[in-house]
Structures are given as structure tokens and as C-alpha cells.
Image (cartoon, rainbow, N blue to C red; front, top):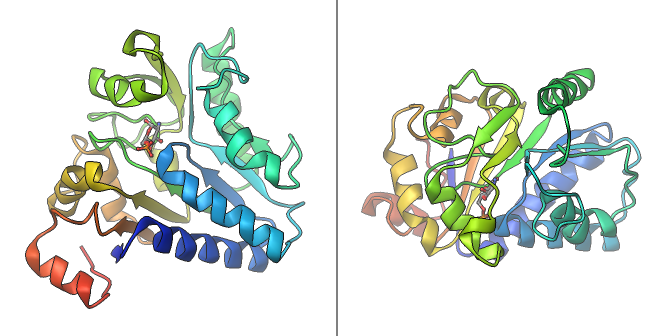
Length: 256
Ligand code: GLP
């Protein structure tokens, strides 16, 4: 289901409130977290909510989607560092509660297996947050990743490395590989939010809206999920069909 919000701030407010309500109702939640600029307003809203209406988070468990291979957790472009800087340091969470793949490790396959096992041990992911790459990737599951993939080593496409080079000094510095949750694990989450914001995501949003479920567009796997919510801001929705834009003005949810 697609929902369109006037701007990313309105989207972040709504989504963080929904997450917070879920946390209040189900303290033992297993939350799948994502990185990327798209998540920043959502994390800021969550931090603000926790400041004004603190919740007991001691039973919460979080699992991040992915991490670059080759980067240490204190590397400023690592996803471990991102999560600490933008969310974890503001919330009363212990290191035992928050899980991320590690970019520096000698046996990556063993780490993938251990990560899968940790998620399975808590009964899978209850709510998964996702952003999207301009080529339709979710996590680091690039186009043509099999839908039945599990946590694995992903080889990043030139497009993804180019997109993500804005955070590095140059493209050569962007790692070529990452650990990512697989599409099978992501789509087994009980509830999924895919967040798409900004004009630069308008083309992939329109493609996703029109697409069949296909491995060429990894995010399309969510179209067969019974509880997936695709939240767009108006800029990201700007290339959707006109009738959809009209429904946007009427603030209706669109099933697709
Ligand atoms: C990276 C991450 C994705 C994220 C994507 C988009 O490739 N692996 O999880 O969705 O970037 O990031 P942004 O939100 O900065 O556009």
C-alpha cells in the first residue's frame, strides 16, 4: 500500500508516532533498522518522542540491515557509526540490545550465519524500516538478488557505489562489498515500512509503483507482502501517474 505525505517531515512524524505506539504496545519488539539520509528525520522524531514521552525500552531488540565490509565500527562512513551518531547515543539502549553486522571480520560467512541465528532466536523481525536505492535495492540487495536470499555478502553495483560516494571523499573509497540481510529475511518481517523521500527518488518510485513483482527491482518483493507500507513524500511521488497524484491531493491511501 502506497501512502503519500506532503513532505518528509510530515511523513517522519506519522511514521515515528506509529513506531512509538507499537513500542508502547509491544515492549518486546524486534525492530529492523536502516541507515541512509532518508532515515534521519525519522530518527530525530523518535529521539524527540522519547524525550517528551519516555518509554521503557529495556526489552527492545534492534537489528540493522547492512554494513560495508572493510570499514571498522568507528569509521565515519560505517553504518555502525551512523547508528550510534544518529540514534543509539540518544536512547537508553545497551550494546546487547542493538545488533549490526560488523565490517571487519575474518570469517564473514560465519558472521552471516550468526546474524541470521540471532534474528531467528527472537522470533524474526516484527517491524522492518527500509529506504531504497536509486536502482531499487533494499538493504544492499541489488537488482537480480534472488528473492529467497538470506543474510549474505553483497557485491555493490557501480550505480550504488556512485550514489553512496557522496558520503566519501571519492568513489574509489566506497567499499565494493557489504553484509546485508537477504530479501527472504526482510520480507518475513511481520510489518514493513519502505520510506521514499525526495525528488531524486521520483524515478524509482514511479518504477516501483508500475512494476510487477520481479527480481530486477528488489523492492517490488514488498508488493506481495500482506503488511508492507510504502510511504512517500510528495517530491518522491511526483512522477507517479496523474490520477495517483490527484488521490494524493485527496490524501487517500492507494492500493497497488
Ligand atoms: C544504502 C543503504 C540502503 C539505503 C540506501 C538509500 O545503499 N544500504 O539501506 O536505503 O542507501 O540511502 P539514502 O536514504 O541516503 O538515499
